[in-house]
Image (spheres, helix red, strand yellow):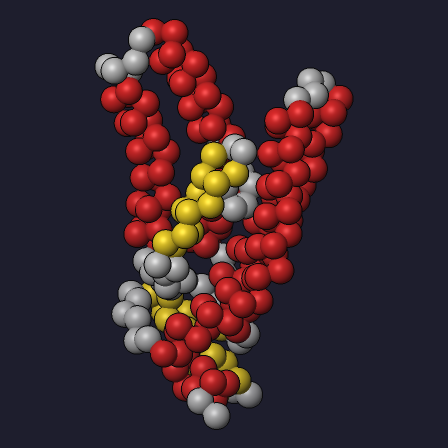
Length: 196
């Protein structure tokens, strides 16, 4: 299922997909957005007169740069999240990207006020701030979905890791939980949580 949202700074697609897909697949989906935008602008260069294309080119570049800012849920923020998920747990990666996005957004808003105020940029950043707050509010649902998918679906991961807490669970990794000196498989542990 796909939902398309339109904002003053452009549009975004929202896919209802598994949170435990392979990281490389999510990388591929994310980079296809900017690549498709560049390709469409390139194609339009053959059909538009130079003055119209110049305007489109400037607008497209502005959107591309804005979309690649490291603020979640823009593509730049999602790319930074994926980099973190290669090294850190699902939970801590989201905590980091939310904190970093707040910091970067706040810094950008201050720069907007003190250096060159632009009403469009200010409103875009304000809407982005509202969207970030909504995403943070939805994170407990995402996290439960991440855990529930692991319980319901038998993913085949190459990597294994011993951990002691759900907060340490990573994508692309099967876990064994150390509890009171015993080692319990991920399925058994999640079955204990969700099976009753």
